[in-house]
Image (cartoon, rainbow, N blue to C red; front, side):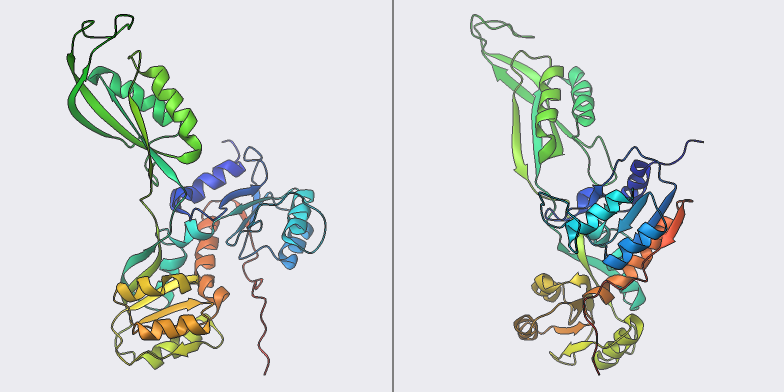
Length: 365
């Protein structure tokens, strides 16, 4: 049996939390390292802090898997020092690759949003709050029926037709194409200098923006026509949902629910009161201020999330939405625990660094 590579580990993660479902702004996936290198020992952390890097240096691993990104913004240098680039330099020097899950794991079934809802006893959940995935395209062409399978296969090999954990996805519909060849044209079918009508199949496949050139090249090279007609459309869709909304534990009041959130997640919480009505609860791990309107529209009357500022809380109250804010990191901890459990199921040796708290804040009595 061949040993696992870093790429194999990424494939396992992607099978549970498809990378394509991450927010378009989020640098998920392999940030440092070689996907072809062996992955015998891996470690899991919440965030790549100085303490986490020191642990990796002291107990070498092949791949560090972090919930939070390390290199969140483009950088032109990796130089030693107390900075994201400095920590990246130390990981490279230690021979450790780095993979990041973040919003791809937030939206996944069994990921961070589901884990937060589960530990808080919220049931019958549904997703809300589209994540806004990376730019994508739809490529459409028209071809004889006996050529469509070959074209679709070539486009899929070039990167088209993937939706989450499904590949070779396409849509096909039958119709009629018309054309009148010029005298110097060499049509595959039809007569010259006359209007021809030919049965054709419309083939549609989605692809990432980065795969556009290779997908179009595959289409043109396998199409039987001298001048294949094709269209490339900008698109968005198939977004993952960042939040969950569902029924809170039976018999709880808003205030008792807030006390339960504090107990389950540890530490104190902030509560903004919009009224005692309390039938649906929403959760967003991390920073959920951008989903206040979406939570209210989903019917929630309380939102559990972190990093809520004064005016955002006031806006929520105006919408009839109470806020329970336990802080950024604490709302993510159930998801980080789920990530650790996922990796422990791979059969690889897993070092648990999730207990290293990434929060920059300390309480003062």
